[in-house]
Image (cartoon, rainbow, N blue to C red):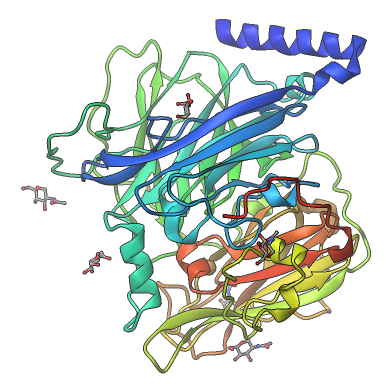
Length: 540
Ligand SMILES: *[C@@H]1O[C@H](CO)[C@@H](O)[C@H](O)[C@H]1NC(C)=O
Ligand SMILES: *[C@@H]1O[C@H](CO)[C@@H](O)[C@H](O)[C@H]1NC(C)=O
Ligand SMILES: *[C@@H]1O[C@H](CO)[C@@H](O)[C@H](O)[C@H]1NC(C)=O
Ligand SMILES: *[C@@H]1O[C@H](CO)[C@@H](O)[C@H](O)[C@H]1NC(C)=O
Ligand SMILES: *[C@@H]1O[C@H](CO)[C@@H](O)[C@H](O)[C@H]1NC(C)=O
Ligand SMILES: *[C@@H]1O[C@H](CO)[C@@H](O)[C@H](O)[C@H]1NC(C)=O
Ligand SMILES: [Cu+2]
């Protein structure tokens, strides 16, 4: 492709320049994220949605590893405060630009703006940005792509790339959902009405209201490929609840990246990815030139929205499809870690061999006497403080925080092992799956298992994949299995990281409803090494 050739040309010129003059390599790339809200119908149902730079879905951000990003977030919402988090980007040395409200900054009020500036020099691959204030994650998300250096990219053997952002969508507003989740009686958000691909889908019996000019009216996303070429599909799960199964019929998928870590190419039948996780797969357009229906659907819950369809289109297809098949591919059986257990890192991981300080987090949901329901992690329902933790650090007020909000202090440079232990709560006897995400650090995924973790279980460090979001699976008593008594262990997962990034960071379930219900822990890493806040940092 012409564009591809141009890209290579630009990259090689940049590298040639760099060889002559190393200082010229750091380029600052500026992006605007102008957030506004107005009517749209991404799945046929008209509601208020959020546009970025007047576009829906939100535009992708593409950068090179050597770039510095300068991102100006302008909150043009009517009344809600917001912050934008770059998921998986470590913010090494810039903890104040993590975009996590109540933790790294105070949320940007309606009508105000803020500029984040950070480098990504130790990272490459597929990431995402999304809102990180209360339930808003539902409404704003986009891809972030950091190109590997040209010499690495060459070894991955693909001609071009495409980005596929999957998400889940509800017709009710996020504020209505939050009220239901935190109130008495507790009201669960339920399964999403739609599974979107690149922000859109169609629902059955679609009938549009009159829409303003430029409003999105949904449809099936189309990914166009040229015959014979090999593509890197970057597949991002930007859902806030659903663990997804993704299928491309008729084509072999070979996984080569998980959350920014390159993998030994591995053939898989279908992709399984949890909220916040990203994978790159190679596919070759070597089949009959026509349209193929790709699909996403929820796993590990009782039901799934049935409209997660999108089209894979050969550029020379003679006919085009408009009606998806009657049924999605069979979604089961649900086997914990089925796909992940097949994956191997491309390069031997540099996992610290010594056991870290092990922190054991037993979590379960708890139905309280007043009719509310929360999630507790190590016997605590986490409450985000009003003033951001990092700002409180500078004001020396962390010590005054109530127990429900106090961060755990970790010395800089410590190796930390975290065991995420899932147990049945006292509400419904169910074990759920949970995608856990750590801010400011990537971690080695040391695997998971059935029942209760104990120190006699040794980790397989040689095959650990460095990533930022990992699933704690239910090994029993899942939604479709027999309920079990409160306290029964559902399963565990273990991660290891080096606490090398001084700042205030969240570890939390990436099911946003669970986070709102308290499923989080906060850390202050290297308290005495946190760099000074940049001058004029907005306090809001
Ligand atoms: C974002 O808004 C600012 C201020 O109104 C404007 O100058 C800028 O051009 C906008 N950027 C985009 C990409 O629309
Ligand atoms: C949507 O919100 C309304 C009002 O807040 C509530 O009555 C209704 O049950 C909600 N529906 C769903 C599917 O959550
Ligand atoms: C769509 O219309 C058909 C035929 O009228 C009906 O059977 C079906 O229930 C409708 N589906 C939805 C989601 O409203
Ligand atoms: C510290 O507290 C003062 C007084 O309340 C406030 O004006 C200032 O903005 C705070 N600083 C930070 C970094 O939050
Ligand atoms: C986990 O252990 C329980 C109890 O022994 C067993 O019933 C269940 O089948 C196991 N789950 C898996 C996925 O092996
Ligand atoms: C984990 O939490 C559950 C529910 O709070 C409790 O019943 C169980 O004993 C705990 N298990 C461990 C190993 O602490
Ligand atoms: Cu969860």
